[in-house]
Amino acid sequence: MQSIVSSYHLCLAPPSPVLRQRLLCHRVPSIRLPSHRSTTSLGLFTCAAVSRESEMAAKEDGQDPRIPKIASSIRVIPDFPKPGKGISVVAGVEARGFIFGPPIALAIGAKFVPMRKPKKLPGKVISEEYSLEYGTDKIEMHVGAVEPGERAIIIDDLIATGGTLAAAIRLLERVGVKIVECACVIELPELKGREKLGEAPLFILVTSDAA
Image 1 (cartoon, rainbow, N blue to C red):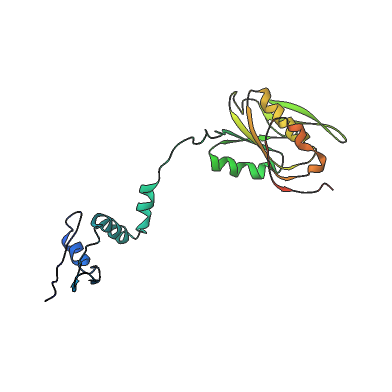
Image 2: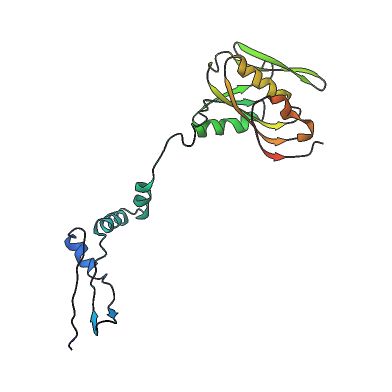
């Protein structure tokens, strides 16, 4: 029996003349069907003419053609599984908090508030005293730098005995600010500074033994 050759052209949408010419080169190789002693050449179009056209357009623009596909597949569901922290204030404790605090504030779109030692800030300030091994000290903040109801994180380089961070927490809470978290680069856990922070969470990068 003479073999029968048939060609099936399947496509979701009629391709453009340029695309038609390119698609003709993408036929599926001949498939031998054992139940019939014939060779059927299934000239299947890729059936993704629309997708192909978008890929070609992206290539012509010099853009990776996969980017539009990825972008169209992204679904954003706000505040899942729970609302975000909504931080509006990054408070940096003198002095190294001034190094780490501003980049964090810039990254999250919050304002940076410096918390300084006495007589370092111009204008009217409020202060909070805290104990040291050798006496007492104060930390100050400008009046009006924060508003009641704002949410803050406090940044410093080190937590040792925790006196400075605890004073910063009290100072902000006095004016109605909610402390979301304290964050330090280094913790000396043997000095038990985190015990002075109350319910404020503490994030650290490195734990080191106290000298």
